Image 1: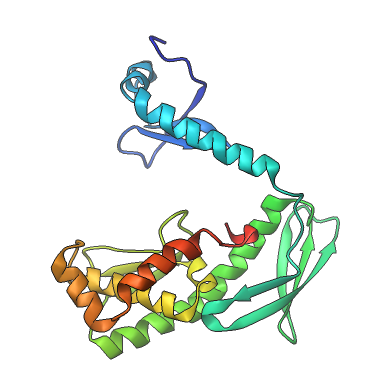
Image 2: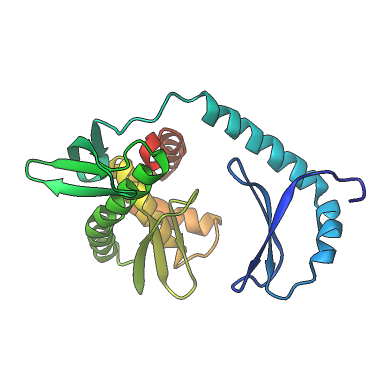
Length: 238
């Protein structure tokens, strides 16, 4: 490859409409291409993107070092959901199952059982449980704020976005991150108002922030706190 020596893998995707470069600490550089794409063109694409790749790879290396320096995985003894004001004691039980399951017991207790020595399996199971909790709490909360403010939406969903706490579309759809349950109630309300206001102003103009401030006066202070809180998401949910 001319001027660029970097390991990468190419993945064909039937859903891809264009070539996308992705760099993660786990997989390194991945080139996602549409099905039928001529992969002979990939080296030229990588050469044109060299500066971005260098920056992304350096960031991934720092992430990899951070992951390697973390203490061994342990199932959390307690799971707290500040948004809903709930806390769950966790009972970890190793079994011969290959997967991990999470079961709710009486008295706000969770039983995490299966291959609990696997961090990936535990995090996946706990995140599935978090998704169920989020659907049960975030959607009604969004409906309540929508009714109170008069800011309407057409439909809402809960997802597992990697970096975004919420998003909206021009069609009136709001997508909320399940990890919002790990923030305080006032910060969740700020995010919900923020996304509802975007359906009126699909930008971050002065008009948008005036609208947000009208319905959430502490918006700027809470925006800063959201960024800080996002950095302290517990390991099992990060």
